[in-house]
Image (tube, rainbow, N blue to C red; front, top):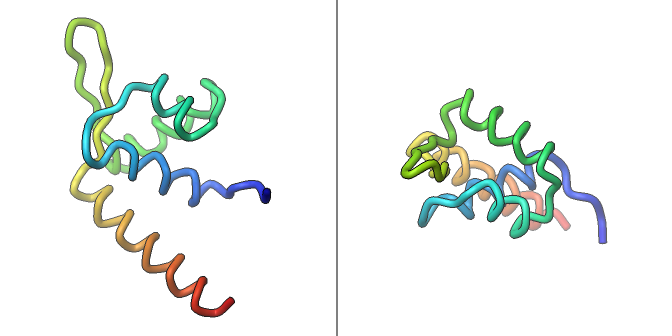
Length: 86
């Protein structure tokens, strides 16, 4: 199995957080990341306003923003074009 690049991992995280909020632990386990890299990626996605967070009773949850959904759509288009070429 080939290693995933950062765009592929971003795609997984944004897809995961699109339908319902997710915790960092869920991102780590479902996307098969370590906690340090997951935090770095969450910070990057949040600073680009692709991911937002909410906190309730000390539990931080992440959601894909509307800008993140648009970005996810463009990534999916890029992957579809790439698949057509192979």
